[in-house]
Length: 301
Image 1 (cartoon, rainbow, N blue to C red):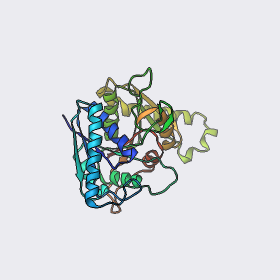
Image 2: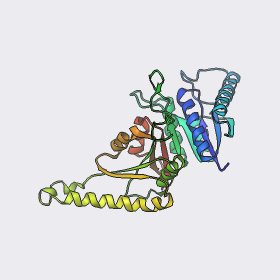
Image 3: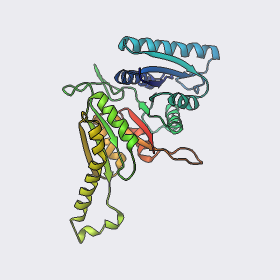
């Protein structure tokens, strides 16, 4: 075993889906899976107010039941469990620092502000520099069908996995982001789709009337810069089929549009030292809240 994939459990359908996603990820990586539950998880409709002893028994049962189910599905996978003391927003980042990645459940934004899982996810992502993957529970679409969310529904005729999608900014260093995305695509043996969104500078708004070729020249320059950015990664991961696209418009919307055909969406969070705490960019924030596919948030410089 080369490392650990850690998954946080709170008993919600989202966290169970996260544990199953993490098990497949650990098996792909030949890592072990570590399931954790924070004893001081806030009380909600999912986690009712009970005595400390009853809460511990409930947590132990949750961890044991989930690990037993995952061992049946993944008999060769090493699985460990533990209960954590303290609030999850504090204890989960500490666990993440010891793992290859942390996987937690997440609710899709539905207009209800301040959901528990959303607040825990946001606080955890802000507090760790390790990749954090947010997984939603599958949604029922009818008899024998499941909707997007767990990332494990094979697409017929394309093998067991669909695309890995990553949004990049060619004007910033994104080696950490690309390293993660290429590695995930290589592990799965699937296509990596790279999206960069751009727009003409404001000063060019009226220039095309004078020279209609300027937008085309800029577009070719952006496309070449993107290709140059990806070239060393193509050479490092020759088995990965890369589809790159530079598009005009808001990057978050383009990533969300492309996410419909992806098993995993990868977005970056730039590491900034700030007196008011860590910052999650608007693109990562939008994708985290609105994408149906699992979303990996990768902190990078």
